[in-house]
Image (tube, rainbow, N blue to C red; front, side, top):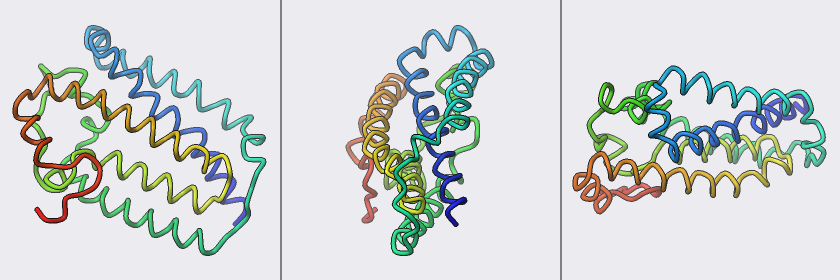
Length: 195
């Protein structure tokens, strides 16, 4: 069990920050990426992500020096968050295809634009994929029980909040009044259970 916790923690440390940093590269420089095109954008950004992931995988052991050990209660809580995240992800997958998840409509709105998503889970929460991501990461952190992952939780929350702000700015530009009306009706992160 300790080996599984360690490998999972190392994978989370290596993959999660570069995954979020991808959006910090895309959103502020969207006009540049649109000029370069979808393929070149992904080649450059995924290349950078790999360059950030590999050193952590190879030399990340010191980052996981503080291990709080196996804790059945935290494992149980972590699994509950992972199940909740998976349920939300399942309802989300009915509306999001892979190309939407990786940002193709942002990069090529004239070719691959989509209507504003307001159905299903999007009728209750504006940013379910970020909530899903955060719940899953927190679940894995509890399961693994390493200090480094716990320290990453508030950083991840702050990073996701910033990404959402950048994304909403773009959505306001693309969908104008339709998006404003949607924002007035649907909460950002905490689902509206009454709709």
